[in-house]
Amino acid sequence: MDTTATEPVQAYLTATGERLRADGCEVRIEDWGGAPVLIGYRGDFKLRWMATKMHLFTIAAPAALVTADALQSFTATAMDYVLARKGQLRGFQNGVAVFPALVGTQIDPAASTWAQQGQQVKFAAVARPVAVDANTGTAAAYRGNPVLGIIYAAHLRSKLNAYFPAV
Image 1 (cartoon, rainbow, N blue to C red):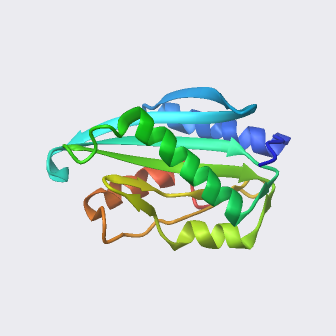
Image 2: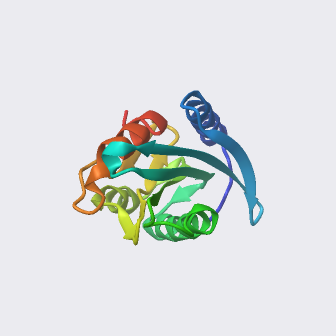
Image 3: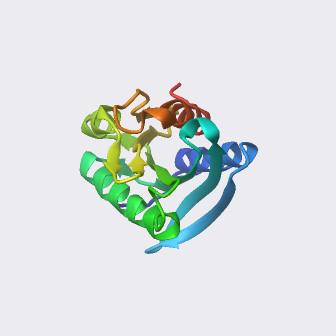
């Protein structure tokens, strides 16, 4: 993944960090193999979720070209990251979710298509990948209601729309 952060990419990542903070997320920048990665975290507990806590991570990184392969790889890395941080007790009144986002100025249509097809699911963990065109602000992601994890769907859609507006 080429992590060249052009001005539009950096501006989008900065604005995303501000949206995350405004929603009460803990926000930080981490170095992932020489690439600056924006990480936001929040935990929410709701009785209507069968008294479970949802640990939601938003992980966004710059990419000169966002391809389906790059987004799939980044999604797998982001899922591994969140499972290592908060996934030890998942399924025991805990779940984890992640919005892995690659932000670039060139988006391969296959990346947008893949992101919109559905969420990636593991036991008590979901990922909703996001392909962001920093030039237009367009964010391609799955915003539907899945069969697995339906009780969290409205919450995840609301947060996805807040952090990555569809434009």
